[in-house]
Image 1 (cartoon, rainbow, N blue to C red):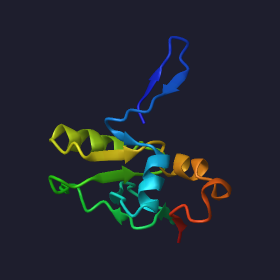
Image 2: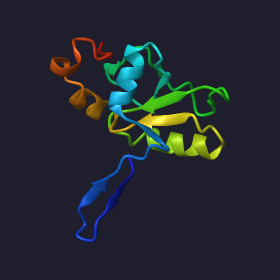
Image 3: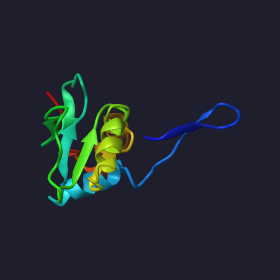
Image 4: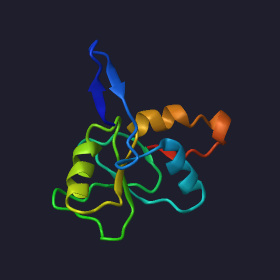
Length: 122
């Protein structure tokens, strides 16, 4: 979740479609059974996750060349370095979840999208 400071030092958070996937798009793709491979990039995962996600395989992990991957964490801070690195190595289909699990949970109210948001708590 790229952030920069305005001249008055207030942070501005911007969505960058080159490196990020919105919570709504990910939810829709999961609902349609067209979800990407989900990788939990957190160094210390909690019980909250997205159904079907797997832990980051390790520091040398690389996706298959044609694989679509979405990395996530709590707020985007741990996924961003991975996405930047992997896209820099040519893995353009690797993106991160905009706003992480925090924004995903906040955005997808079960009252609006229905009972199954794909968010799980262990």
